[in-house]
Image (cartoon, rainbow, N blue to C red; front, side):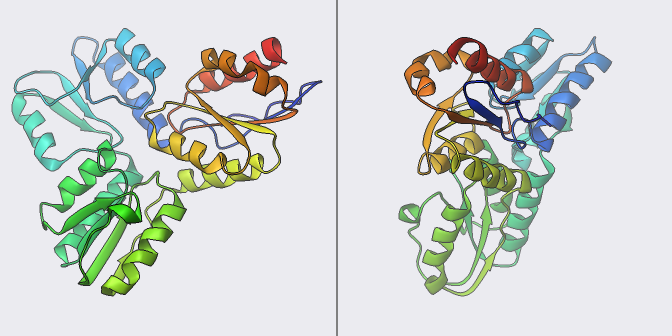
Length: 293
């Protein structure tokens, strides 16, 4: 876990304790590297980007770990299911294509899939709170739709267009905002005789958001570090921008675009998404302290 940064002589710079790799991401990255090192003569693939971070993907490529952007018809070697999960149909297709499958779906994501399946099996109209195009949500929906077609996905109340139902069940993408869940639940309450809510936002996401809010309240500027494709990172930036000045960067190279804002800020906080490696966080801190401050 990253340690808090010492105070700079001119600026107060603080790093969130809950910044960088979460358990599920760390597990996935370390396991894939271990798979390759233990199987040097076999090809190792990942279906989709293992995590939303270009630097990590490039490092894996350099180690000979290749990214597949669609399930192949034929192949051999090891194919990894990333932490976002995948549909049973796709996993079976990969096996039938000739690969050994290693499932690295995050345990927290697995729990959402299992809860969605349970609700679908028990006759609930299922609402998945999340972004429909996100791979985690696609996999959750695919698992649930094996048992029911009464499934909708929404990341806002505006996207929910459903009629009153006898039973409605709700699950949540692990990286969603609690405020989004609360708004959707409020909207659904008068539409259901029975409403069952499974708050499946993962603990890491909740702690990361809560701590960042506290830092932002005492900062002139907060810097969110991580991929623009990362749901938990973009949600962090969305939450914090309503509290204090917030910038979202992928790495230290982008700091040059905000020199004036940084120079005008005395109390600076730094947080990072769950797919942001430690070295990128350290590069951001070092650049602020050595070159900009």
